[in-house]
Image 1 (cartoon, helix red, strand yellow):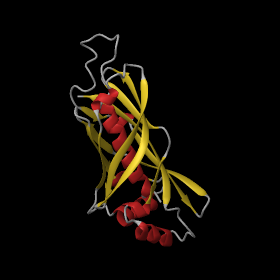
Image 2: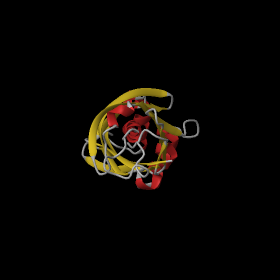
Image 3: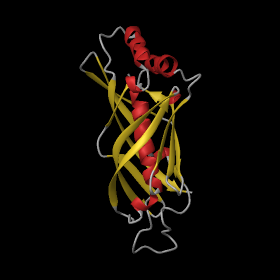
Image 4: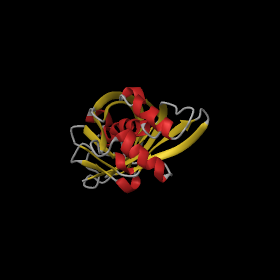
Length: 212
């Protein structure tokens, strides 16, 4: 079930990353302390970031899942990338984690999902410290060699001169058929002896980026 979330999660992530890199200098702050967001590179702060999804089985049982290991960066030109370590999937149940890694994701050959996006830094040029803005984002998500574009909207907040946070304004919906994972989902359902596992899942994320 946690299958789709990484993708979605990945998609949403990418969006956040790109946005992060772009916020600009904050009016009213010390010039030396608040260089424009477009100056230098930004990296994801793993400790301050989260990527989660909700799976639904048997038509009515919802379960929270997440990925524990993320990495990402945003360049000054708005090029952003996010890597999701698929082996870090955490469903709260050991056997389920093992099946997700080995059957659904096939981490031995496909260790990570990637999310990439490209934004216009000028769109964030007016963002000051303490301010937030929303922007639409299209990100390309790739898993097991299959890619799909995911559209979302993100809320970008410049927490300080060198820190930006990114969250989606609504959950991102991702489905197995976007990445050719329908057969893998069926195998998981059969192993768990479930009547169904919903093929579409909502993904949420909270990404923190720091300059340097």
